[in-house]
Amino acid sequence: MGNLFKRPRYITVNPVNLLKAAVMLLCLVLYVTASARAQGGARLHYSKMFNPRTVGSVSGEVVQVDQVLSGSGLDYCTHALLKTPQGYVTAILAPKSFMEEKGLTLAPGDRVTVKGSMISIRNRPFILVMEVTGDRTMKLRDAEGRPAWAVGDDWHAR
Image (cartoon, rainbow, N blue to C red; front, side, top):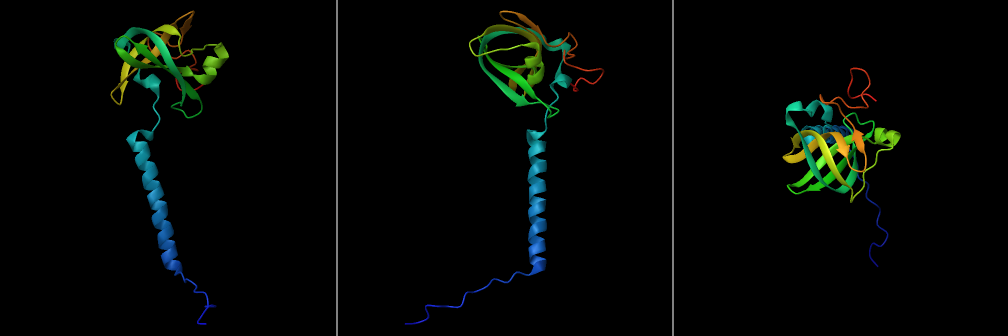
């Protein structure tokens, strides 16, 4: 009948090799995390990108509204994708909590005009919105880019 009931084999692991493997895995995780942040995983503080010399206006239809993790990582920032005669542009509005607190809403299908600082992020057009005009006007930043939700001298605190 042969050897039906073989004795199970046990794998022996050298503790030094196990420690080396754990250290290598930890290094790999740290490397991947650091690379992700260096390649754009780091959060942007949009207010620092505001440039009064690039202020302009665009009109269009809201195609979609998204909530994107803010630069501080403490709140979400409301972004609206606008379809304009010149193409698509993403309007960076305000923290979700500020929008909710003030009762400010945008929805797909809304026709709006936004005024703000035109910027480029990864070769895509964005506008840091100072003011949105649709069925009402929302003031979000002043002429120097200071957000309406800013507290004291720290433009990134809420």
